[in-house]
Length: 88
Image (cartoon, rainbow, N blue to C red):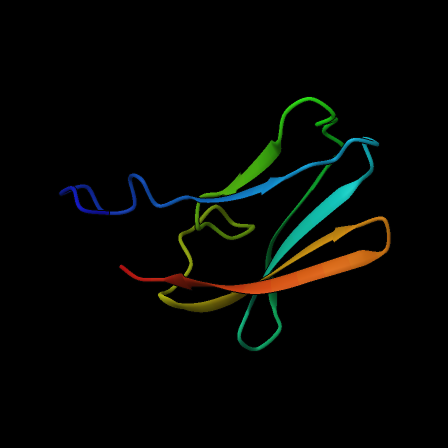
């Protein structure tokens, strides 16, 4: 973040349409394929986009180390993957 408060605005948003209200799983893995965070939602976004945010913390509510992380979004049997870089 450009401000002077480290970690204050460090958030990743996953924006998606989910008109059927299906279960959406979002997982974050480190480069060693270790799951560091996961959430499941059933938001109905037939009118507007839904979003889920990740604040850069792991299951223990601690900030993850700087590095590359892999995200996986799963819905209705389809998986979408990408990368997120955490820089502090």
